Image 1 (cartoon, rainbow over the protein chains, first blue to last red):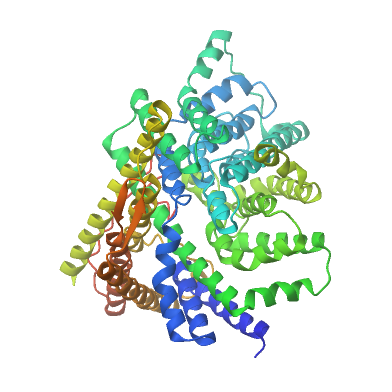
Image 2 (image 1 turned 90 degrees about the horizontal axis):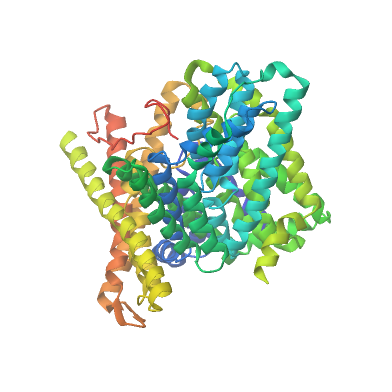
Length: 436
Length: 183
């Protein structure tokens, strides 16, 4: 059998196991072990099983993941971010679709304390969707906006996906965060423009809302955002000022959020315990996949299958742009079926060498990849953000309505992806400035 | 079988409890290191080693059993959901068995590794002197072992139709209703 046939065999086996509902981490471990055993010998396979898990987890950069997770979950369970939407609402309700725009701002603000888009959608959905429905916004616009805006959560730092990518591709997490910040802000602006245009064209989507607020009320509403502002400034000034490593920023962030929640009066034992339990289960469920992916990388590298795969794709003589379009399509497809961490860890062992060969920067690719995976969070049939919004709104909107609501946001997202591929400097400008 | 399930649940709660305390240690230790460095120009010794080898390894693997108990391991339901009920059950049984076998293998292998590290008394030389690291290796067989036990029990429970007795810890969410599946 040629190397390519063997590659096909093992990748096929991997996807078969995953589609049969075997946990992704377990599937990766099993297939990589089988691969190492059959291509080499028992000792190499058995030996890898003993070394790889410990060596992967024993990492300073990786430890920023539980730290940032704890920070986000503390903010979530102590409801620190509730002031964000009300402040944005008071300031923006005059605009066409003002409440929808306010919820996009709310998501972006929450994004700065959490690395998860599901948490963003859930928190903002609970607050903003009922408010929009009360003002007779169309269910489609109300739910679609929050589901889509949640994806900003994984783009604006901190971002768990970017930390994992940075570790695997050996890129600086701080630089990835800066690239993500740019793309997150572009997404924010694009979503706002989209809402403005849609409501201008179809005013019934969002009837004008008359919230009268005096100047002092507006200032007071702004004051309610202090918990988030304090945490964000503390964490990011340190991180991007070069004073903190990501782990330190995460730890200080978790500490700050607990302190702020205590001042805010919402910190209690139960909330803290829930935040810790969620931090643990999220970390462990990520790590077992990462360990499996690390074993797969070892198998692909040792056997030469990884090289054979990427050179056979390159042998078609396609231009780098065309290859990148192919990569984009693959991830859009994968995003429909897999959740982001699984899709990313499963494919990076094969895709990273390929991207490296095409001459695109790996830093740039990391940011584009996270954006792509986040589109997968809102596309059917597996759109986690949409499911979460459905869970939050209950009978107020059907799944189909929400999926219809995100349609135009996905179109905008695809335009952003095209823009990022055409002009990589958009992503790289800020990180390069920082790297100098 | 119920008492066994209950006992495994308690082990999971215990292992995750330790991991939970270590998360707090991680945050406190790193924060203290930052404060000491900036205010007194006196960083703590071996912070990176403690955080990576002692806290991170434990946080990563000790909760594996709990995650399995809560069915929170990341898996793809998309295709299987469309199958008829009996096929779904059969696949669930297979998945539990495969998970139990694979994680048991990892538990045994990492256990051997831990014993080898213990025998050589593995340590690391840091600024503050010698730090013994072999105990951190024992976390892996415990974590993978618990995950294997949980899925083995699930396998038996599914195959015989009996109650496994596993009673997973519930997570209350401030924003989502209780019956929201698997977020």
